[in-house]
Image (cartoon, rainbow, N blue to C red; front, side):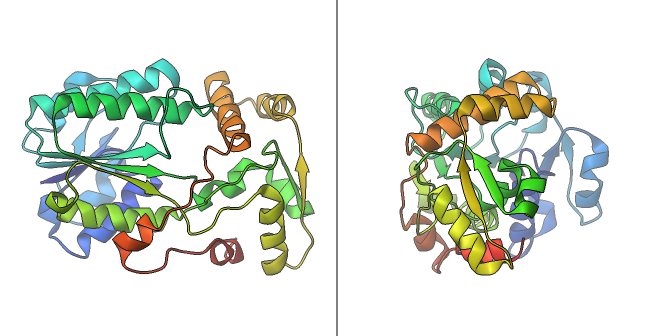
Amino acid sequence: MIAITGANGHLGSLIIDHLLQSISPGTILPIVRDQVKGLPFKKKGMEVRVANYADLRSYLKALEGVKVLIQISTTSVGEQGIKEEMNVVSAAKVNGVEHIIYTSSLAPSLNHQFQGATQAYSTESEIKLSQIPYTFFRNSLYMEVIPSLVDPTCLEKGILPYPAGNGRISFVSRADIAEAMAMVAIHPEEHKNQAYEITGNQSFTFSELADQLQKVKPRTFKYLDISIGEYHDTLRQYQIPEPTTEFLSSMAAGIQKDEFALVTNTLEELLERKPTMLHRYLKGL
C-alpha cells in the first residue's frame, strides 16, 4: 500500500494521477483532511483515510498497513510545521512503514534564510533517526508558484516587483516532480536512503525571468527589485497571516542568498528525459 499525505493538494493529486498509470487504485491510499476532499479519489476506486498533520492519533490510525509513505510537507510553518511533520514520522515508525519519500527543500540547513529549508532539515533528521529507509526529494522552487510571487495586476502591467536581488533560482516543474516521485514510490528499493537535489536544468535571476516572459508574451516585462521590507508590507496589505508573511519573506531572503541557485541533472536522470523548460511553462500562463 502506497499512502500519500496531502493527497488532494496540487502535488499529491499529480502523484496519484501518475501512480494510476502503473498500479491499481486499490494499492493507493490518499490521506486527506476531510472526507469531502477525498470523494474524487473514492470515485476512482481508492480507499481514502482522513488525518490531520496536527493530530498524531489520526495519523497513527491512517498509516495502519502502509508500506510506502509519500510525505508531502505540511503548509504550516515555524514550530507548528515542525511539530506536524514529526507527527507523521512518529506514526510511520509505530506502524512499521518500510519507506518514506519526503518532499524536502533544496540543500536543507539550519543556517539558511528560508524557513522551509530549516523545517525540512529538522524533518529529514527525524526520519533518519527513525531508521526508516527514505528518499528525500529536495526540491527547488516550483515554476507554478511564479504567478503567486507577485501581484497579478503587476503581471498584467509587465512589472515584476520582488525582493530577489540578483539571486538565481533553478525553477522546476511540479508536474515533473510528481512523475518522478510516483516512479520512486513504485520501486523504492532502488532509491533507498537517497537524497535527491531536484532542480531545473538552468537557473535564472528575476531580470532573466522578465526576459523569458518577454519572449513568450506580447508585452515588455521589467523586474523591479524592491526591499524585503516593502514586500513584507505588501503581503500585510493583502491580510496574509503573519506566520505566512514571515515564511514568504524568508523565501525572498533565501533567493537573495542563492539558496535556490543549485542546478543538477538529477531530475533528468530520474525521468530519463529533459525536464520541462521554464519558457514552455511561461508560454502557458
